[in-house]
Structure formats: C-alpha cells, structure tokens
Length: 282
Image (cartoon, rainbow, N blue to C red; front, side):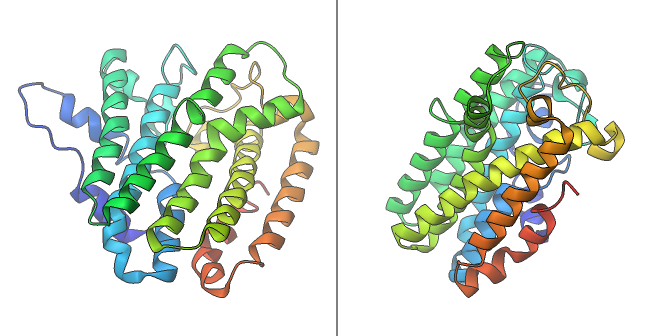
C-alpha cells in the first residue's frame, strides 16, 4: 500500500499552464485518501506471481485509481448525486466549481489510458489492459450502471434489475482490476475468468456493504454523506436493512469458499484484503 501511495504522490498529473487551479484540481481527489481497493487488487496479484513486474504495474494501478476517481468526481456533481463530501473532504465542484470538476474528471479518465500506454510492459499486454478498462469502464459497464442509476432514481426496480445496475456501476471495475493483474503476469484464461467472476460478486458485496453503511453510519464515520439514498435503488431500500445484512453475509461466505479454491500464492497475496473487506458490514 505504501509503495503505491508513494508512487501516486510522485506521479500526480503535472500540467504547467497559466490556469490558476487546473493542475491542483487534477490531484485534489487523488490525494484525498480512499481505500485504493482496485489498485491493490491488481498489485497484490502481480506481486504474488511476478514481483519483478511490480514496478511496471504501478502505472496501471494508478490508472485504475485515476479512472475510479474520475467516476467519483462526476458522480458527486449536482446533476447526479449532488454530494458535498467525498473521502472526508469537500467534493471537487464544491471546492472549485462544476466546470472545473467536469473537466478534471474528463482529464483523469483519459489520462488513465495514457498512463497504461506508457507503462514499461509488453505492447500486447498494454493493448489488452486498455481493452479491459475501456470495456468495463465505458458504455458496456460503469457508465451503463450510472445511466440506469440516474434514470430510474425515483422508479423502484426489482432485485435482478438492481443487481444489474450495480454489477455495471460498481462490480465490473473491481472485477477488471483483478483480471488486469492476471493479464500482466500472464495467468491462463481459465484463472483470469475465475478471478473476473469472483470480482463481480466481490463488487456486488462491496455495493451491498456501502448501502448498509449509508444506513447505519454517520457522515463522519463514512467520510461521505449518508442517509441520502431514500430515492435510490439501493439494496437496503429494496430488501430492508436486516435482509441486506443477511444477503451480504451469504455472499461473503460464498466468496470465502471460492477464495479457498485459488492457489496458495493467490490466497496469500489477497488474504489481507479479504480480511478487511469481506465482512466490513458487520
């Protein structure tokens, strides 16, 4: 984690110009903290199999964090969630203005692909990484989930529709983080697919947990506004708090069982993250 934090702080976007706040706006949300869950999934997989590739994977991990951060900046905008707080800090449009937030998000989105293109990895590997991030971060993944979320904000969906929403909005980027790590170290397709499928359900669990936290924690504890999901298609709104906790418990137990089917290297590498996140709703 510390190696990634150091790399992030040493490689923040640097864009000298006479614009008074542009460069600052690009780095504010990147340095505001966060779980770093997606980059750590990728880096821990790389470290398990090919530690010599760890430094080469750091730009890819930063690309994931940039891409995720862009999505948060845009998600917080008045046209979407209209949030004032993110990672315990003012959201970007509150600190500066909406135009700056939109453009900073746009820049982090595209800079993510630039970082991957410049990573010291084989060209065919980088092409695959770009493909995976574009697939699951764009119109077939995260953006689709966000579109469903916004369009149906005041329209209740059924459980399968809610799962589809959150598989796209949240889970696919988590799943592709795991697959990208597997691609960097050259794991066979069967293992890549197993990691991706595991990541989808891990992402769903992550979202259910976020919905539970929104219902049960204060703004200070969560580091972002809570109690604001009354009009959203959240698991808690659909199932209620008690059944959402049961759903999370069931999914966490299933993931733990599947996790134990991975080889020993992978288990050792990912166990700290699993210990932290599988039952964070309790």
